[in-house]
Picture 1: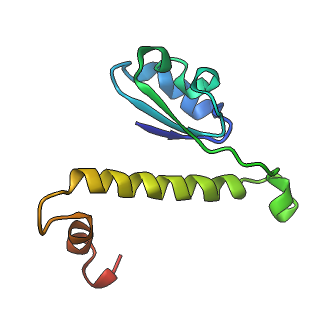
Picture 2 (picture 1 turned 90 degrees about the horizontal axis):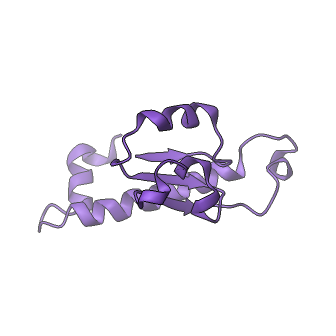
Picture 3 (picture 1 turned 180 degrees about the horizontal axis):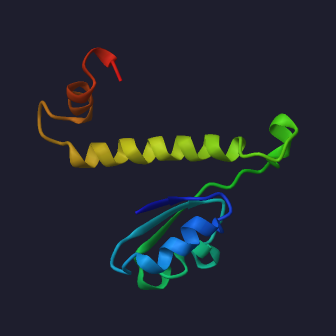
Length: 113
């Protein structure tokens, strides 16, 4: 399960954690740099079922538009999410003639999304 939260302390995600079986792997996309301190991995990390995709930004969000709103962090999360999707597609779709590009084209003919 992929959980995305810059702070790793989003109440809606933290409330969800106790309901996720510890056998379900958690991938946390967060600004944390160490999995031991990421709250999203608090129930799953010690069992080895948690993975941290660290995405810190080194600039305050307010510097982007002058307001404290998620701008830079959402852009970083989007980029990492796309990279994860592409890497996963490359692992899943390995049959000749059914690679990632072929599968994409079958769902989006002519590029129409």
